[in-house]
Length: 126
Image (cartoon, rainbow, N blue to C red; front, side):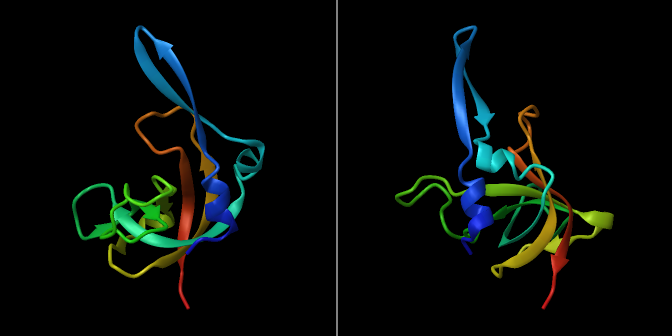
């Protein structure tokens, strides 16, 4: 699954500050990752649902399958991106990877969503 796009997304870092006694983690996009903002990418991975249901228009895409612990392993948490399919299309979560193509958006402001989005995505079929 790993390719140069996943490796670049994995460069995401966080700056830690303190506000009113609480630690605040703000995403930091190194230059190589920042250069991906607005670029079209192809990315293969596994659908991780954000909400309950069988079919999803918006979901997380992970380099690891959902049945493998995301927080285990020696290298920490793997990169995941949030995907929104174009045209209201939906995909079913399964144990098989999918290939999507879409526009990269870096999110440095909305704390309720992940830091990297793929918008206007389409599923590439063989």
